[in-house]
Image: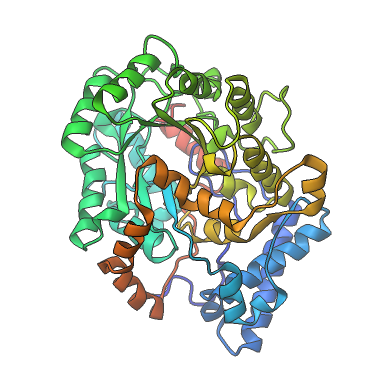
Length: 488
């Protein structure tokens, strides 16, 4: 079965889908026009190359044509901050497209999600709420068997992330909510790793332990996860709490004990959802300032700020210390706690924020420009929030070709994005954090079963080009209603 036989979906997705942690934002006029223009150019190029639309769009030339069309529209709309650096001939020449956006970077995606398809977690009120979200609201449900969640499974994640994208290694990231009714329970995250291992590719998946220190038994559960499941890092949601009240990462009641426990267990990577206020939770606990304070207190622990503290609907502009919203909050905290570019134990992660900004060239330029300027390219990590946005390949291709314009470089003292910066951000930074030997690992990856499977798959690849999160305000409100205003 071909997911899109008529070629109605573009390989680079500009739509309103979210990861269900923020409300879908309407497309701008430029984004709508960009989609229309890309469809037109794809049709022209496919006809010129004597290919069907679907066959053409599955090629790198199809992706190049899409990005080139975006360039034209965004330039006309006056967005001069950034562009996709692609030669015009790449839309009609596969070799030129490969040269422009093919890439050979080591890609380590530290934010991926999958769901236990058995539904064992669907018990009680919390489980019923998750059932509503996954089975009735997310667009992904159309690919699921009735009453099952196979379309969110580890197998589906492996297909979308490893077969349909250039990702080499991924982290299965913990979800929010209590551990008894969490759709990604620890034993299933471990199962995802086992599934990959059964195919001779166990080195491709690492798992995080979910930590809710304000949940009864939360710290004790850390010991089980470390000793029985061999977690590589921790994931926490300081905004979440069983009663709707979160915590600060440096507070003595919950935050400091979490960090001390991580140190005692020898798993000293703490990833925290910061920014992206969760509906029904106290807004103050979304502020990322606490992760910078915690990082200063514990220089022997690595802290990764997921989503880089961004907020949907808050335009990203040049850094302003007085701006109390969006990524600027994280940069301010980074500066106030004495961190400098390319040094220290505090990192920014791009999950959801790059996907949100990549269709807004000015915002994308400010996002990457100021993070590179203040954090440094060696302190930014790649993450995509797949599966919620489907395959992460479009995010990869967009970032691989994105460049900050000379006008923005001059005006805001931003650096041009170099190939080495891309390599650092795509995977080398996270590999250093997780202590992966990249040269040795790439040799193993090149010869594992998944690489062999991908070589066969590429002959008749079948990417869905679909996103799976809620795409309308109504769908998002239904999620919140199902959760009684809470995210877990």
